Figure 1 (tube, rainbow, N blue to C red):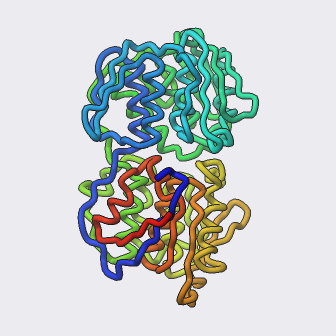
Figure 2: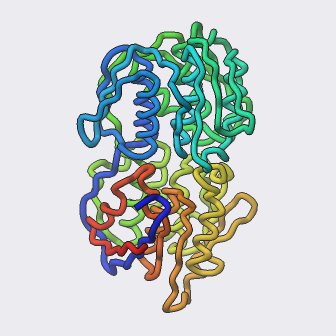
Length: 422
């Protein structure tokens, strides 16, 4: 079944979900590690990695740039490189993989030759202008006429280094992209935020940790500024931790059903920003009246659907960036919740307000078909509603392959009944 076909209809289990589910490896960390291994000289072995659409786009693109990427098992990559990326023979197609597109845009400046990076119709709407402007300020010849992909980089084997300011209000991935390319510059690079805002700052910390594992020297030199030395990278063995964003669905499934789901790793052991959602989920049904989603953006869909079954209304703030994700997630959440019950979710500016009282008297034969907009997080989050309500139908269910190909199997292993229909 393609990502744009079919529907899954869920049947509420009517009992606590109990069992063990191992979340997949972190998408964010896997894509960072793949790129850093490709920029190192030697053989790197990645374990616990995610195999999904997004990471396959990254691995395929690196292969097109002269890097050997092998997959010895279901959660492993072996990357063999000589620290140089070559110009690919054709444009790199990256689907709707934002991390791969942004990270490789900066890495393309290290190529001696021309690299064009493109994606699907969704990716062509996702902004990349701030990263393009920062690379241009570092002397990189780069163009993105629409401010979104496609992007063309005319690389000269590197860039000289220096200081650059970047607007990271839309995405921390712009900062991470520059940071990861910087050790291969010809001189030290200082990267500073152009303003106070940055989307999900915790992902920059993930980037720095991965860079250090591969031998880079990068340090904060002030509030919103980092200095990177031109050390290059060295190959290493690297273990990828489980995906915290994926874990939020399982934590929420446990909370919604009063169950006990063993993920094999304590919530406190996650280093990813979305793990901050655990304490909120554990407080269910008494969620805070206001939740700031700015630093755990990918957990917001999970929390929004959970809030629909909470004790009181919840306002989600700091989520304007969700409008430029795989889809406009603020709109998708509001409309999806309203399909379940009028007034359950609504937009107020860039805020999302969830009012659980709207569920007080849903029609007995209600069926809510959720338009996922081909967004994996919308599909996985709204499936949670099907644990409590009959008639939840998830369109385009296979879009979960972007980051969690085994999601539906995980729910089935816990005893959730689902029916696929054309």
